[in-house]
Length: 413
Image (tube, rainbow, N blue to C red; front, top):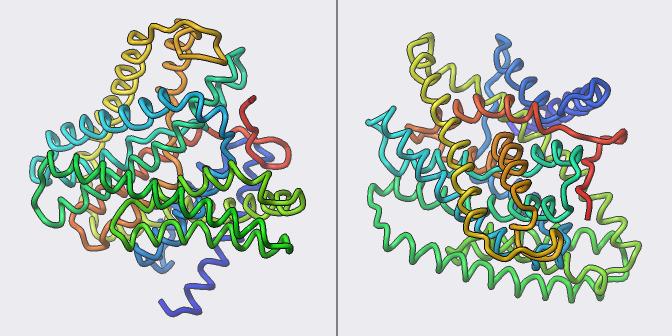
């Protein structure tokens, strides 16, 4: 596909996304699932070319802005006050789910390397708070519960992608050591966060010296890619570096940026985020064409994948139940719901958060972009994509709560 054809394809996909998003809002349907289903329909239309993009290009283009936007608009005091529980959910639950999904996948597909099985677990394990918030907004829950869910969704994307990178490296090299992986995980995470914090302060300092709001907005975008690429060049976590940079920029935005710059940044970031999300969702559906082409007419593969997908889904839900219940039983500090530990939400947190957040998990666009970054000719890439296509419409159908203007309704603060 030539450069002109690639540009035409992207523009066509954006036009389709605008139309479908408008229709989805009118019909009160989640736009994400509508876009994915539209991509699947396009993939099944005979005669349309197969859409393929360079995996590294997808990772570098989409991940940094999406990561920084989520971190930038996080309320820092609430995030810091609940950091301990957020880390337990975002790291512990993701690691547990990754391990269990990897084991189950290897049981169904013994020929797959363990590293490839854990790569699948890392892709599907980080849950998103959007689906749970769509339910919690209709319940009289403490605002702090929404803070926990939003904070977890910010970090678990990073932890999931870090685990994914380790699994891919192990799958390609054929060597894996738990001790070395743990030490390397701590190293790349700590150094990545340190780089992000330093760049966040530097970028905030420079942004405060810019007098043009347009230049300030452009600088925030450059900050995202700078944090990611610098950390990646140093072979540490670009994901955690970008998240840390975004948290610092968000923390200092009221000191460094004028009101006009903040308002313009909010408007521009919302548009860019919509464009990137729309492209990722449609590309997920379009990827089905290449998968089906390589599988041919062998429906035996579908019969093999269906029970495996159902079992993995059940394991993911049960793992979420087990980890959240463990946190609830281990909590011994009963304080006010919005000011202390998780326990005063009492059994309500254990039951309502458990039923809704664990049972209505929506894997966000960041980890989907990670799935696209898998080496194109890797033998298990098709399995990962089939797994994503199986999961995406069902979970997204529960996650779409938007206001009349199409913006996500924020959780109460």
